[in-house]
Image (cartoon, rainbow, N blue to C red; front, side):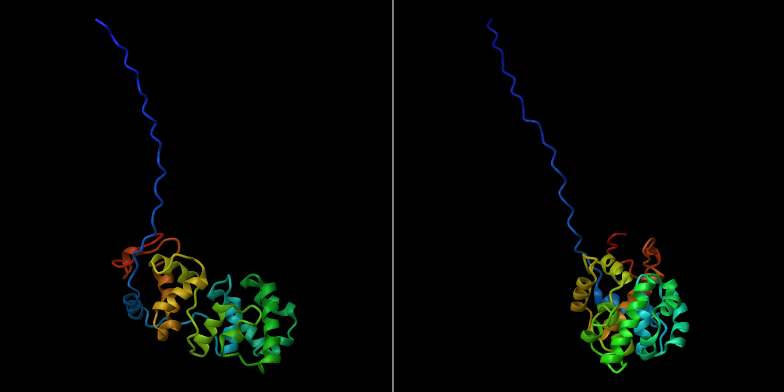
Length: 234
């Protein structure tokens, strides 16, 4: 009997495929329904910074950068008592401003910005706070966020939506944005939030962020958005 040797044919080794990247979830909380719930649950939402006039709000908002509103509210009474107008702030020794605002952090930059902004207000705007965004953002230390805060809360002018850390966090968790860029978030939100709600919208999100949707440990089980929130990043 003749035996023929069969050649062994090696099968090509299987190559492990890299897992396909996960697609970003397209699920979103219904914005207008969510806004209605915010109005219901946070009827007293308001600006947390203490102020009695537009100048005080401008100063307080500049100080609030990288600082809590509570700390700013502890510092501003003495500051406003000593320098109650742009004219007086413009003439203040910058070292004195530094000492009064030291606990807010970055006090040297903030003190210099406050003094230079006061000088510019006095020289170019007759010591009045401009009521338009373009003029406000030309002031030292004033960006779009600060300008929106001042225009919305001091003058009732809806120039845009204030985007702070709470608004950034909740906008992502609720599926309304895919970015942490404040300007892009604002651009996306103003497309869908009714203009008459622009000023209050950030106050609602800030209230919810402080009460329920906290950065480290959101209280999802006690949240009135539990059924509609996609909980992105949670």
